[in-house]
Amino acid sequence: MRIQHDVFQTPNHVTPTIEPQPTPDVYKKVIASKTMPMWRVQTEGYTEGNDQLIGLVSRDAGFLDSPDTEWISSGVNSKNPEAVAIGRHGNFFLWGFAASPTFLTEEAKLVFVNAVHYIKRFDHQAPIARKRQGTSLRSSVMFAIDSISDEGYGRRLQAHNRFVAADARRNDKVRARIAAGEKVSKFERQMLDRAAPKPPGRFQYVRRYFTDEQWQKVADDRDAIRADLLAKLPFLRPQGWYEMVVDEDLVKLGVGNNDIAMLDKAIKTWAAGDNEQVMRELLMRYTDQSFATVGEWRNWLASNRARLFYTEAGGFKWLVNTLGDATAATGDRHTAKRPAIGAAVEKLAGPSQLAAVAPMAVPTAQNPVAARLRIEAQADGSHAVVVDVTIFAGWHAYDALPAGSPYTAMVPTLVLPKGMQRVGEWTRPSGDAYHADPNVTVYEGKLSFRCTVRGGTAKDLQKVVCELGFQVCDESMCQAPTTIELTPVPEKLKSTFSISR
Image 1: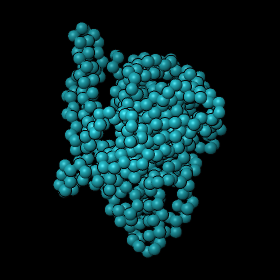
Image 2 (image 1 turned 120 degrees about the vertical axis):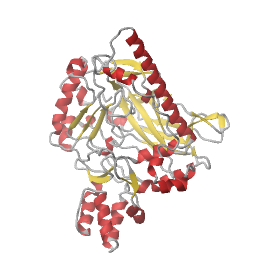
Image 3 (image 1 turned 90 degrees about the horizontal axis):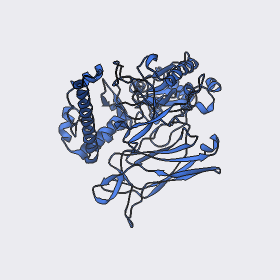
Image 4 (image 1 turned 135 degrees about the vertical axis):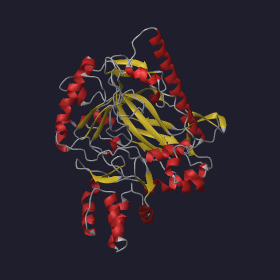
């Protein structure tokens, strides 16, 4: 929760009352402790009486694709820790807690008033990109690929079993309360009648990306399935309700739709007199423009290149950031600067309130580790330094290694400006047992390292550097040990998460 955001500061200054609460299941993949600090928003939640509604969150997938979005707080939910319970998209404010003001805490009432005051600044600033319901993202394909590995499928089953067990425990408590003559909510009674979900099949998630004919060719061959989907990944586009298909026009062009070079090559091919109609349709398909001549397309791209950003949640489109400039990307992903508000509004909010989020780079088979550095304000005036890491499916980095091991563990090292100091040690995520060596633990998928720093100014915080050393291997090869240098970007300052109960 970004407690330094204006919704906690003006016109009413609110210092949220933080209480330790049991860590929700969806947070346990990033938080190892049994409890975590939370802020109570409602005096009664949907399981606590008076038939409160369950509330809503926006999934995090693609929410920050657009430069005019802000993540302010998550909440207890069934999606993930990054889901948006309080946030902004253009001139829409997202308040996911369903209780009427009667059942909001006194602090939450003030924050709600502040939210109304805050969103007035964005009057008539319609969203640049509109999140399209039913659009699948490439991250869902990566999830599916991970799910067919032994480790990934094991995680899916463990998550399923935890959900079923938690559901059963809750229902047992509700039945005991009913037997004791206590009042239970309508929601709790409805949950009693819900059948337990079936465990996921190993190929349940990947099967949707193959036609019957294609599936016959790969059958249950995990290596063939993985290779097929990775080859398709740059050329996928949405079609229908949460479906994706390979864009054969892109395959022939040889450039993925999330690479800005696709626009250049389509214009160049058209200008050379090759496949003019196909190139125009490609350009229209992946932008919101509809120029008739190649010269108009060339001029549009030249004029807007620095402000283009790519959004999957907004329909796999290259759109123009009308609020600021973008920066060119490195590698296979275009990364835009993320100003939360335009220059005209910056004078109102102040630079410290900008939520300019640089999205996580996408790891690839060639570069299996993507990482970023975040700075989070904490309630006691200190700051958390957070290193987010994503490891490409099928690869692993090393956590704990025995003495004399030839491998290199993943270790973050801080380089701090004068006047700042680290407090305590790094909090490292728990690694998984390595099947090939019981003395080794490894990292896979998404993980985060955290430590606390004190001192320094706001400018000093932007000078923090983290050197992340690691080595990654898959089942057949290892890359050489390497170190990457990470610097922070202005981002959502999180210290706690909202709770809806």
